[in-house]
Length: 305
Length: 239
Image (cartoon, rainbow over all chains, first blue to last red; front, top):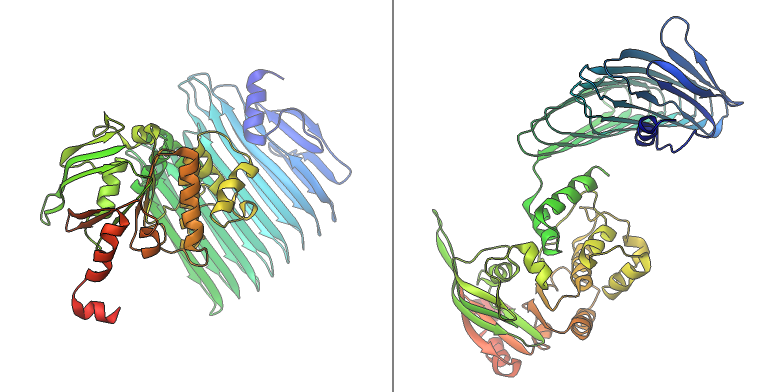
């Protein structure tokens, strides 16, 4: 494994070596490595690029890693990954994409993920996006995630984009059935002239369904962030979305929440806060001996922790 | 030793007001209490010492060195600590992070426990908690005091440390001050209205209307302070 691949894998999947359990590593548009387990099958699609990940009923305490690495400048791809998760499972899925662009052409990855989560299953889905490289070519990622949470299931999606992605449009849609629960935690930092758009749309269709969408972001330099969230309460349900952003320098942040209650028993809440780092936070850390720059760094990294 | 020479502070603009008027003080006693009515300039004076506010005129000396033009950070490195009246809340920064900044190097849970236990908090319950709005006022205040203690500097300023502290008695707070002095020496400046805190002071400074109206040992200052009361006779009768 070369150094760039190793670095990107570590950044997006926390991997120092080939992982245990099921995995599928895609590099520069091709299969780099795959392993299946007794309960988790990975099958290459025949009609379009991508894979099906099939997880048997009652699969517990197993993980799947499906990182994507692009080290070749100018590569553009759309990849379709469909997850079929059986009933009564408890699994962790680690996806993520790292682009190293050392050239002048734009590299682009669009990961289109769909999740069909079986009854009473629990899924933790971790997705990290990271870009590096000295080249002038843009690093673009447009992930789409479509989620179906069947009765009594639970999904936690942790999505992180900390640096290096010039342009991203992240679209997540979910349909939540009876007694199912969706938790999304998003962390984004943009810098320079980056643009990041987040678009959540959740239908709370089931009785006692719930969704909790929390976004924390930091916008630096000339970057621009747009946070859209839409929650539709169609039954006895509970929906909460929260957008908390620190704005710095000449950045721009937009928060556009939408809540629709189509049922008298839908309880929906949205909170949004955008503001610069509080002066008193900087002052407190400076009285502890940190410089203003160090204090700012600690506040930002704590906020995105 | 801290010396304030001719310190004045004025807010300009529509509500221009002289908040501190020609303050001259020398502080080298163990415990120095600053007291006086609300709005008298006590917190402003503390912020001027910590470097958060620049005085309009006058000079500040720490152990003979003029620190008037030093930043907050530089003064922190020279050995000045400041416990805020209203603790600042942070999203994502933990109690351990803050004590680590205060100590200046990585610390173990056992080490953090040393400081937190002194303020009546169990380290294992608090160390990984964020210092955010989920902590009560009293908890945040104790952590603020623990942080100042962890700095171990020769000059510490506490702005109304007793405010918001409930069950945890004054006695423990006083023990903290004694321990800090035993470890680091120097002076501890305490802004307070509490008689029990004024009682342990080696020197009491009474600040009212931006001026030092009295200064001296507690035996000299305290009787007059209690007799005069904080306001008009009607108010005093109700207290």
